[in-house]
Length: 127
Image: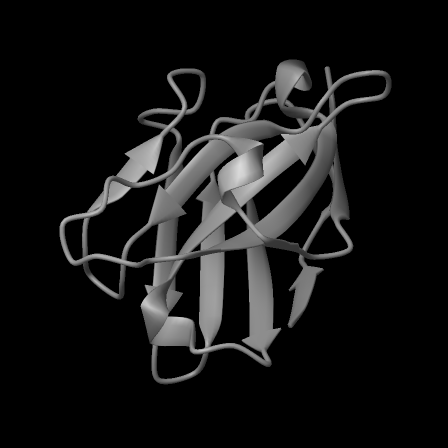
């Protein structure tokens, strides 16, 4: 499994960024796709995840209303649109995949529930 994240960078507070993740080596449509983020000295924390293209999604409380996750199942791509960024959003962002074993499975939010992570892309928000 390969998850290649891109789109990170530096932005001022209030700005926007769009992260992309290209997935290969997995049955994309059979996986939840998500984003996690990590700051130095801390564990990776859940940001958002989505079931399928146009399907249900789930967000961490800290990003609700500001971030939007989407995916294109035809292209094996997942995206994270980030608006109204603030300095607390500064982190390395990781794309992640979790197998969906049931049509009624709950969207996972714990790191251990995901079995593949990309290499990460740095997002830096300055005040």
